Length: 97
Image (cartoon, rainbow, N blue to C red; front, side, top):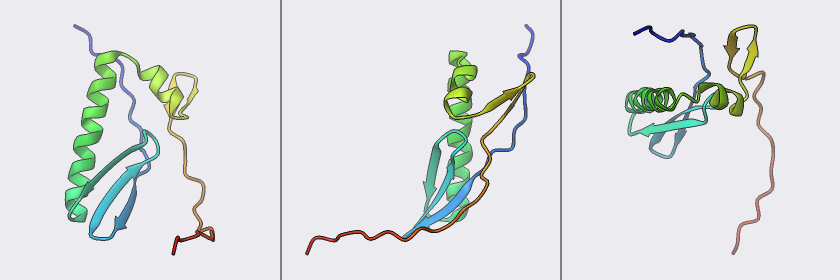
């Protein structure tokens, strides 16, 4: 049985801390994982990503999934969306009293 063609892509991963919880988030697949430590969050994200890849591969829906998440196809190569900047925006949030 022939192995399907593979591509290797570097996907962006953002690392966040919310209170005592560490988060890993990738906008490339809209995946998030968490842990009690940075290392736990990284391990959890690696497992989440592995399961995601396995499920999409099993369903043979890579083209649709990549297109849905904004990946671009040029020739026969797919590229994930790139983070081109980051900034903080001020927002007024009304808090009930």
